[in-house]
Length: 192
Image 1: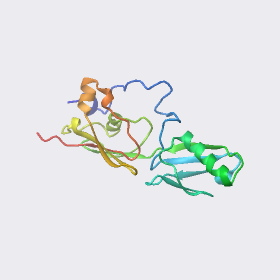
Image 2 (image 1 turned 135 degrees about the vertical axis):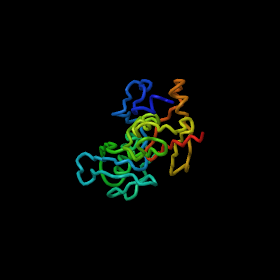
Image 3 (image 1 turned 120 degrees about the horizontal axis):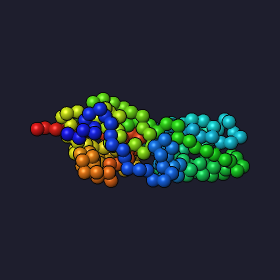
């Protein structure tokens, strides 16, 4: 049964990333900020406006001068332009802002995995890699019924089925999905 995930927790190599994409450094123009992220916002020449901020469940941060600002749904590059616009309207002349995602949030891996728990999210983390973080599948797992439970403040709760056995045994890598911060990966028990 799925030796790659049932044994020691190792997985076969994932398909190669697109040019310029790595797990350690995601493209700044494609990662979408969401709840649970910790942002490092720097305004050049304005140390009192340079600070870390955690994105709330509703997608906002509290920021000096501006109050509550919605940041979810933006890429870091888009958010930089947004903050430059907001700060430039009434407060600063030609502000230069950088946004760095310091922490991406957490994911949960639950059900029939050897080490269920909460794990640090990283960009380009797939379901198969999350299962490996959880130590691989137990002997009574039902891999083709694996679910990703995603709670989006704008669209609500979504459940996505991910057929792990098909991905690993048939090489159907396109069925493995990338996770988002806050996702729950659940592997149910197989009832014989």
